[in-house]
Length: 102
Image (tube, rainbow, N blue to C red; front, side):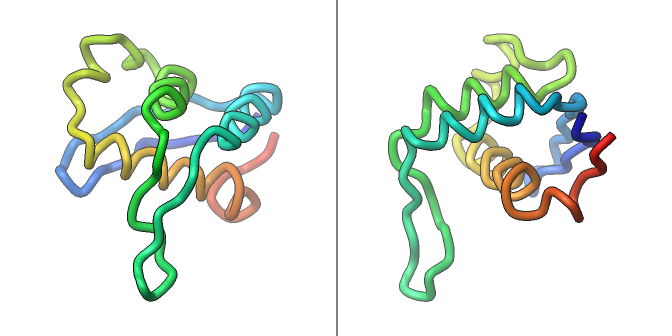
């Protein structure tokens, strides 16, 4: 299991993340095939194309007790994007540093 903690967004909203099993992680990572990153001139990721279904899936799987329609609809697009990019980094790029594997 990947041990997750709370994620504080720039807006001040705090998301309670649940621990993610290896099967859930693989399901989330596999769903990235449907998305495409958008980059600025420096090569930094500034957004994602075709992300709505994937981000909703990630929110439902990753949020601890907050993955309801009402909660997700209450998040701004900036909050959803920030959550997604942060979780993507935790699950793919920084797994050994950002999370603990039990």
